[in-house]
Image 1 (spheres, one colour):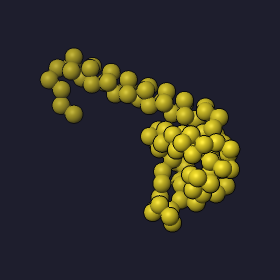
Image 2 (spheres, one colour):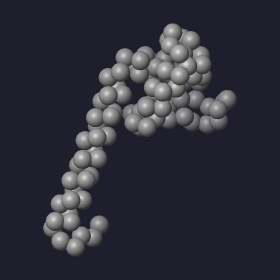
Image 3 (spheres, helix red, strand yellow):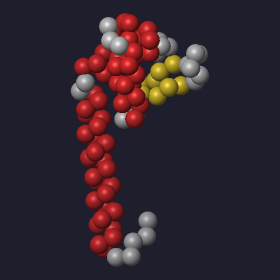
Image 4 (cartoon, one colour):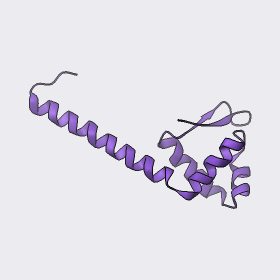
Length: 93
């Protein structure tokens, strides 16, 4: 990365550090969520489960499961591998 002066480098470094702090806050919020913990346990047990089946298994609404899984995907905790019908959920380390 090229910087015109030390001030530019300092600003870029602060943005990067700030972004990392925000990512860590989001990740901590996701991982500390009880429903997310329950979803993760169920996905470990059955990675091919559908969101509808997951909602039924957890006694939650489909929209709650979809919202929580979206948060997990955005935080980099969860990935969908393969097609909608034949795919599976992968928890990222």
